[in-house]
Image 1 (tube, rainbow, N blue to C red):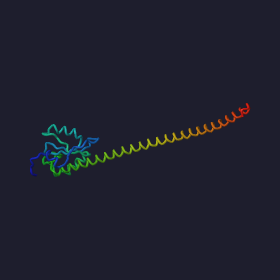
Image 2: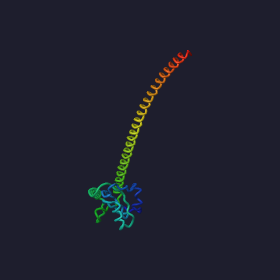
Image 3: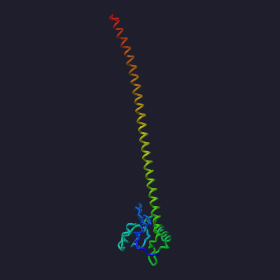
Image 4: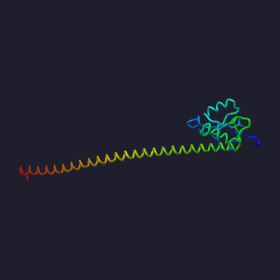
Length: 189
């Protein structure tokens, strides 16, 4: 492999956006890909931040977490097998050369994790919309019930007003009849 004058960190933007993803709820079950001393990639599993701090004590430069993915020891072993051709000879089994093909594969892992995160965020948004719709429906149902009750109360009030008007008309007629009789008795009519 020809030696380049650019460091691996300088070459990263050319290879792709290798941004570390936020940790999942259970950091103990993450497989991580760390760039150590600009010339090794460590593929391991466990608590990413804890492992990074441990390796940083002996590293010559800041350790960069290139990617994480869900999985434990079994996924880590699978990745070691998959990337075996990039293994650094005479080095521990978890250390690999930062070859462009390995970095490309790590970027695919990042893209997959970002896609999962986007799907999760979309589902969360849809769930919130459904909850809001359900709340709106419940609110609408309550308002419709209040409107029905108000309408019934108004109809009841109108019935009472109708009865009072009829009673008034009847009483008015009775009063007029009584006044006529009284006037006849006194001789005014």
